[in-house]
Length: 235
Image (cartoon, one colour):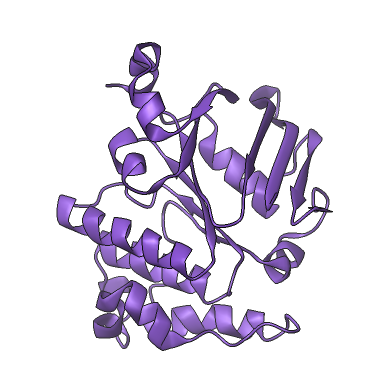
């Protein structure tokens, strides 16, 4: 198993965000975390990356315990994260934003240098934007750059937070195609998403997250057939 989360609990002050949640992801798999805003999806990703510290439970990545490791250690072990708000540096060019990751990965022994041309194959638009500053990018363009920057870490597992949020239908299709190309590179994906339709385009399997718990798991098609999930997903 590539990723195993077991009975993870997380609090923000006195408010419990994650309630003994358990889930997993296998090599070569795209796993969706489906749920409405505030359900706990982003908190799961941030706990995996070490940005949040869980109160209890465990996180195993490639069969190794990483629950107490630093974010830097997790990145060097093969994890990468593209946040919901992209976090593209406005004063840097797209090239400089992506190169931030290549500088980090140089310290990871035995990992090949990021192939920029391969990044362009995933998001052809990024080639056109290469010399443009982050401040001059649209929302969809920033998300492309954010994912490309994460891929520049040459991860084994890519965590994506609401990558489809706010995108036009045409750009959603481009992102869906990109997810398939990323998987073809041998990179697994855990995708936090509030829209079942978008998740159905790319995910092999999905968990329904509600109030910090995983209340259902199955294929997107199985989730669509569960009428009781309609209210949770807002359909």
